Image (cartoon, rainbow, N blue to C red; front, side, top):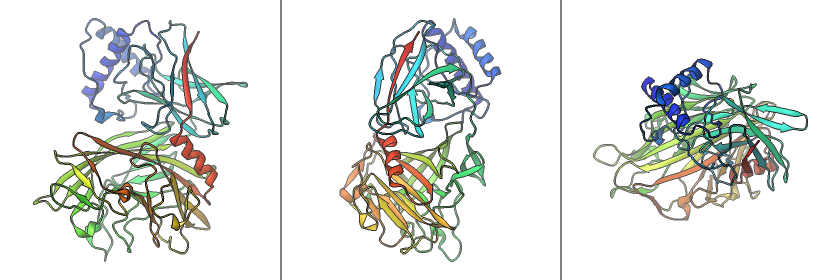
Length: 492
């Protein structure tokens, strides 16, 4: 989280941005719930910075989703001087479909956002626009949908990153149609907020008062008689449905190394050694939680950013081969009445040393999920985008659902892969008897992570009460992989 000194520098930076871009369109936003007192402090900073605007480097990208504690919001780190890049995304950094029609307007202009559904219906779709190049800043702002029945305010949320973004959620745009929105000053009320709470030292995302998922920063100690070597952290469990049913497991007796949602490589080569980060029993490698870099909350999404170390235990002393960052976001979508929720995981992996890590051909290893305790060969079902069950093992599919009994009904999780992922659609390992699956690009052959390069993959999780609706799963995957087109222009 930001220090007090860093927040002071943030205010000064905002002042410099506003002074240098004076006369351009004043539509930039950092957080919709900024307090009046903070705005007054920014105005003071404008005066102080007017005659003294030293250059500073952009903030470290390691803080790209960092936000200040509640009540003290940080400002964007960079605003371009010309043009506007506008991006419709359903995941941080996903494929861009943009139209740039913004110029440097006069102060009487306003910003109009048009969202075009394209070939697919859009419902509960996260959208973002970059705020680069907009110019002068007047916070806070919100999105106003223009409808035949009059304007309708929509909550929005600022994300500080290398390219600052404004997020909001669009609903009910039929295929082939469009919706128009404007950016307006002020705040839009939200019925529910997404928060990140401390749960016995772990990170728990909640939608209102209902838990969505828990990320384990605290090391889990296995119950007797399971060997303590299977203790771990750096994984997500439990994952709850909107009705409160748990759809993941932790340290199951048959395969105690499989806990919730976790990421690990299996057959690797590092500096002439062969650590296995997946199989904890072999004691040759492990993945552990290292640090929490940021948490964020708001009316659009709640989430966190954490760092993992992939440790080679075959070295004379434990040696970190890879550093991995998870960006986890749960969207303020669905809920108990809709019987589903959505959250995303983006993982970015880098070499921790000057040595590469070779991932060797193997039939499993990657982003995995272990289904709930009590799901068995007989009652656990898989459903791939191609309509297969367990016979879909190692097929290359865009999404896979795993489901089983939950109290008096069924519950499950659909895991969706993204077109930007390596070897998309990656082969999916579906176990022949156990309730577990993992997207496994190594099934197609060797590959490596090289020093100086980042390996990033992203997944969306559709958590549902009741049986899977394949049409809904497909619609949500289209939102994720083929986002709507967004056009931004000025209107006088």
